[in-house]
Every structure is written in structure tokens, then in C-alpha cells.
Image 1 (cartoon, one colour):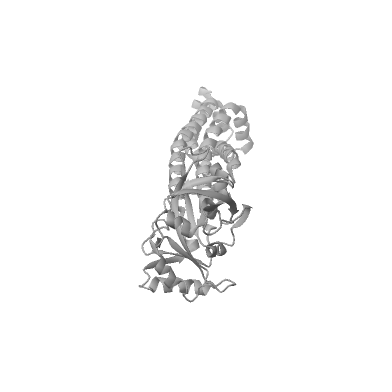
Image 2 (cartoon, one colour):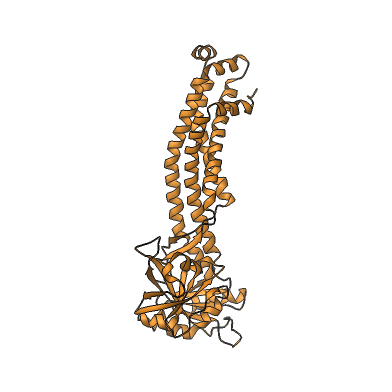
Length: 388
């Protein structure tokens, strides 16, 4: 015979203050875990959504990132006419020679400044990025010291908005527009004229990378194989989507740290739940004896107290999820170990995150309630009635 759940609900309601405090402790632990997962999932989704399925990023062989790549202009001239590269309406190959560098921008959030990517591109480079749409101002004019910034940059750095000037390289650059891309990683870049920024940093002949657009999926893989096999070029070619997906290593560290912090907090929450349940066992000793007299087995008593602990943890799990839900969709940024610059993205509370957080709460409830439940089940009838 099993005790009805209403028995456990009544006891939790009677001890409403203790129940609320214990549930809050579990909830805060769950919120920390869910928040760290939201950071990781937001970064992962932003990077996985970045890159065009037909784009190929070409860097010097052995380079893990564009920033660390020394890509020679002469190599670009050799590869841009490779078969399989798409062409625009004017018949020009959709191949963009690019240079990437990092500058420091000051914002309200970062008074000391944060690293931001500056990308030098040609008009062909803008054509390949057809998903980037102007939302304010205009595109930079080739040959001029002008910059068009991503929407994340304009939002997070007041000095990088249209009409302002930003200083890097050999002087100032006029911010003339803001663009927004469906691919959030792109919104964390400042786009400028290739030749202007290359001259500023003394990189006229040695740049960073080339971005190519293949004609179709078959040509995409064939072109990657061709570039990799061409020993004259000494380049590394990979799908652009693959390149962005590899940048999730920063999120792995956050997930690890968040889990460690949550586990440390979970120890305290487990002891809190355990203390609450031990107090419940001591206070309800006579009830336990009475239940045994009425025919309820030791196993039924154990299961009942364990269910009560799980219900307490479930309240905490729900509270923790509700605490962290308001951050869903909030825009933040994180430094990338690959690009050494900040990537802006939105926090994402996914159903998988909520389920993981809730199960984590139940695990804390089980760990904290098991020993008190065993103590309640082991009580002899006469001893329990006498203690009551």
C-alpha cells in the first residue's frame, strides 16, 4: 500500500517557510546551471547558423584562424579562376581577397575596451555576403577611410555608430552605416575597404584569407579537394560553415565552469534538502508510527518521504527555470579563443536546457532525501510512537 501524494503536499504546505527557503536554494543552483547552458547554446546556435553552404574559406595551410593566416595576394590571383567558382552578372568570379585584424573599442560595458574584428573586403566580398542588409546609412566607399559596422557593434559600442569616427591603423575612419545579417557572427565585424586597411597595417601583399562561392554543392566539395591537393598554393580550404562551427571552443569552457559552479552549489542545496527532510522525519515521528500501525510498510514510508523530497526539488527546479527565463534572447558577447575578438550572440533557453535543469533539480532532491527517507523507514513502531 502506497501513501497518497496529497499527504506529502499537505506536509510541504504546513512547513511553507522551510519549503520555500529550501526550494529557493535549489532554484538558484538550477538557475546557474541553466544560465551557463544558455550561454553555450546561444553561442553554438549563432555560430552554426553562420556561413553560406556554398562558401569556401581559404587560409594558409596550418592556420587555425584567419587572424593567424598569412595569405599571399599572388596565391589569390592563381586560385580565383579555378573551375567551380561561381560568377556574378558581370562575369567576375565570386572570390574575395580579405584581411582581418583586431582593434580595441571602448564601450559602456568595457571602459578598458574590448577586441573587435575589422575585415577589409572588396565589392565582391560584399556581393558574396548577400545576407548582410543595410539598416542605417550606406556601405563604405572603396578607396576611402570609411567603415560600415555590424548591428551588434553599433548597439554595444556607442563610438562606432554612424556619424562617429573610430581610430585604428594610421588614423581615423568615418562610420557611414550599419548592416545586419541573419548570421549573427557577421554582425560582430567592422567592414572597411581592403586596400585602405591593408596599407594601414603594412599588409599589401600578405593578407588573411579568400572567400569563394561555389556554383553548387558538388562543385563545392570538388573545389575544396582541388585547392587542398594543389601543392603550389599551400593553402587550407574548408567550408565556411565548418570554420564557424569550430569556434565553439569558448563555449565549452563556459559549460565546464558553469557545471562545476553548479555542482559546488548543489552540494549545499543537497544538504539544505537533507536538513529539511531530517527535520520533517523528527517532527512526524508519531505519524510514522501511526502509519506503520495502519499497515503501511517500511518501503511505503521510504517511498513517501523520497517523493516528498523530489516534490520539494521540483518546486526548486521550476523556480530556477522561471528565474532564468527572462535572459532568453538577451544579447551578450564572449571572447573567441580562435579570433581573439568578441562575438555577440543571444542567450538561448532551449527545451533541452530546461529539461536538463529540471532533472538536475530532481537529482539534488533524490540525493538530499534518500538518507532521511531511510531513517524514517527504519523506525520501529513503538520507538516512533514514543518519540512522538
